[in-house]
Amino acid sequence: SNTQDWNWMVVTDPERKRGLADLYRDIFEQFYVPLPIQPFEPDDPRGSRQEAVRSSAMHLAEHFHEVPALVIPLHKGRADGLDAASAA
Image 1 (cartoon, rainbow, N blue to C red):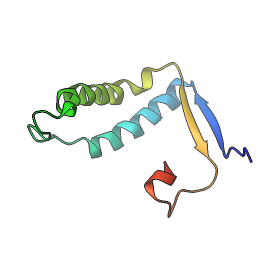
Image 2: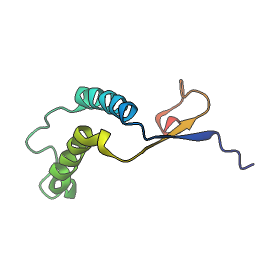
Image 3: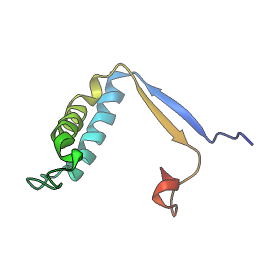
Image 4: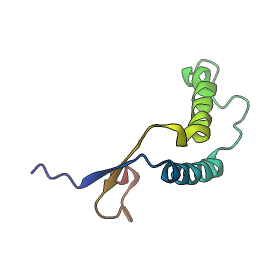
């Protein structure tokens, strides 16, 4: 079967985008913590990209509301009790 249990919500209203941006920023700030000076081994390529990834994440949190439209996937049902891979 090719059942697709999702829908899409497109948000273009500036006030609604601002409200969603506020929620996103609140959650972002809860999880954004300073990292150790060097959490990766010197030869690990993730170390050289870490600052760019963190900077990009911060930029998104600060400018989330500025996008022309937010396209949000909506899945039918709940993910309670599912493992992380299934819930994703």
